[in-house]
Length: 88
Image 1 (tube, rainbow, N blue to C red):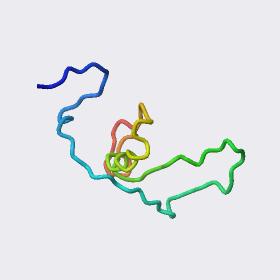
Image 2 (spheres, one colour):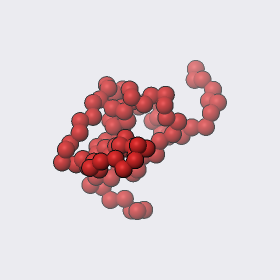
Image 3 (spheres, rainbow, N blue to C red):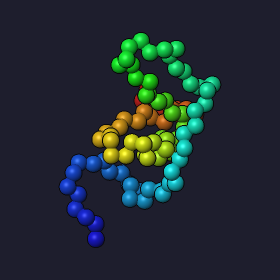
């Protein structure tokens, strides 16, 4: 018996059949990395990340560090897949 849903959520066909993934490790590729040469103020953040790859695998790699700390995340369409997106 399924539990009644009491919150707003996104639904789609096959949502309940999502794959089970093992934890992943992100490795920095220095050829694709860019860091500012220095901080301008003490409030500068160098915490941004741009991840090239499958979004599900990327999220799994971020899960351990950020679980319980984020309420919402926006993921861009599947760029770098070689597929044309007609509405962009």
